[in-house]
Length: 377
Image (cartoon, rainbow, N blue to C red):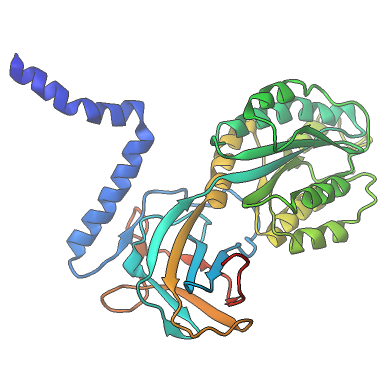
């Protein structure tokens, strides 16, 4: 009897991981896969990654991903925060310190430290909530509130969120200085929109302007059809603002859901000639030039997976620090290059997916920084 009890105690943690916390088990399994691969290969320090979807969730092409570089003149410490993704845009975990080679003006830097950073984020949620056609705007009434509540599931305690809705004008529902507790009541107040214009370009431009003074890692999540009916701002103007902004735009397109609703009314309906494809392409382009991603919603079931993808892309970074070997030269740019290498051979690092197939990782880092004195340093 005593032996049986001891056995049950021993397997309790395994039962917990399998049934109560399957995510923890998947992380442990992924790490074990990496270790096993290295042991089997002997001399080959291959990195094997946990299983991911075969295709990206986002549409179109990725724009240039933003990296961060900080230089402290007094200590000459350089700190970079950068993303390492696979061709489908998924963050690549499990890459070790010795696999990063950092070069500054062609000179490899020594004593490099590497960590993984999970930063708090500031998110502005901009939702379409108006339009000229009641038959289509009822999709907004049914979907936007649900999508907003599902975003709350991926927020963490230190994250900040503001919620804006737009029709002819932009309205602030929740601001960054308010607690998460008010969010549910804000989404509960969203019913079917009335008749109005849908001035998307004006709304996005105003939200980009609102984000200029928000510190830290930040993004705008846009839930919209991309249709604009009467904005003063042109598409080219808001596109240029997105391109020069430091705020990534992640768009979730509602066009296909609204298009499915439009088909019910046939080709004689007043909204039958809406150019849904052009609106979808504009959402993709706005996301691309800002360093974000564009998603197209075919069903509301997809929203949780989309939010997970956004938050992974927004939060996770490798943090690389080293003391610069270059003599101080304020104002002169230092060229940066980061490579992933086999620490024993110096050749490019082999990264395998869960099926043993090689995948080329992509390192996103800005090309240079200036060794200008920092205030207070």
